[in-house]
Length: 142
Image 1 (cartoon, helix red, strand yellow):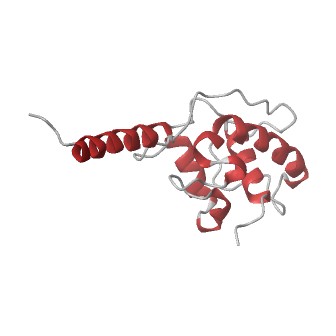
Image 2 (image 1 turned 180 degrees about the horizontal axis):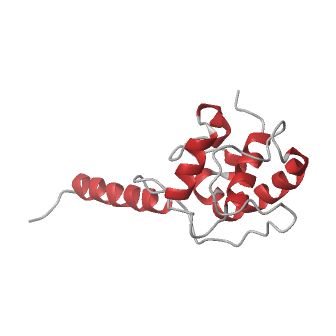
């Protein structure tokens, strides 16, 4: 069976599009996160960001933002975009106001069925909360 030129072009466009989609999630090879100057939050998973202004550990907010920026760049930006500005395949993380802390920590720890890996065996909650603190420090989209 011989395909016409337009059929071959359509098949090629489809295959290239799928290859682009598959590669769009970026490299999710876990990168180490140094949380050394942040207090150890322990093993019990918190459901509220302890580094947010007004919370018990707010004095670590600036350090959490610094750690979070590095952790985000190494582990999240490949899929969620530089400075959390999504390229369209993933949620714009600057709009996290629609997500409460418990939702965030659950999604990061357990991953999703739509492609986000589980990070609970890779990042401790210090790193996870530092990432959220960094994202919350970014300007919101207009």
